[in-house]
Length: 376
Image (cartoon, rainbow, N blue to C red; front, side, top):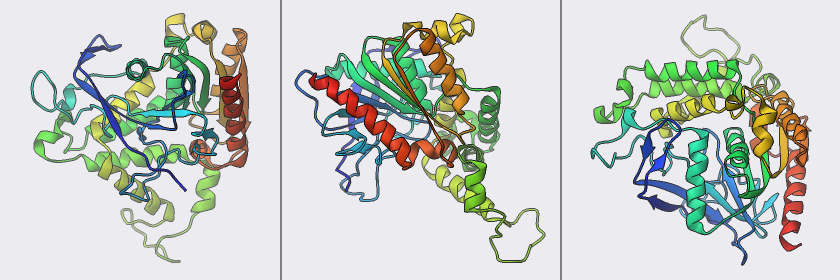
């Protein structure tokens, strides 16, 4: 049984300097909290979200009984991240379309919708914005920073930007940077959006249209990369949608996998913002903490002080186990405290959101130990 979650909003008037050299002011961050902050404010867990997720990490909304948070199987009373022990915070990133200030909101200087003028944001910018929110909440040090995929990049970045502000970092199904192949997938998805006639250079709001065609294709491309070949074959194989006969058509839906992808694309285009998709995939592309160190990840990770848990999944080819092992090696080179679990799971990148018992057991064990430190 899920608990009731309540969205909260915090406004910041002061400008936030961004990596690009630009800044943003008069912005709002949407967030949710679960559990109770203890007396010495030491039991806080920050959860960083991935591309199309939000601050709604766990629980349900009172008026929406089917609105489970995207990591509801992981976070809650008695779950691996136990809210009877931890005070969990989910924050929606700047530029998103789920409550924090983004391209669809009004620019404070012009009174017009940001649209294409919304500044480019990076993982590092999100981390600094999250740190400001924690300052407001009176949380000087986190017990754990936790994230999967792009959220894992944020967790890793936290340990480098604010090394003394957390005791543990849990990085799941992530990487120290994107491979060329990953950047290529992101670029194809972005081109699908920007070449949609309804995109209007990013200022489609003024035209009262949505570049749904581009969003559908972008989501279809992304969805293929989140699943493993085994899962797609098991779920769909070469089954036909319309029965046993081929239509011999180049445009009709013939196979079940086509129907599934079109459904996912259609659903995504109804709720996600096109400019947000461009911003977040570009933030993924830019993330590379080793770059200022000549590509040497060991040098980059020398700043980290936290204890680490890294988790990868064998069939995840978007963020393969090899990428997690690169982080593990860099941390071990610096003699950091590192635990690593490579889970043999068939689900591809999406495995970090699912109910694999070995995965949930690893997470529960690690968080139990982190909780014991609170009373030590």
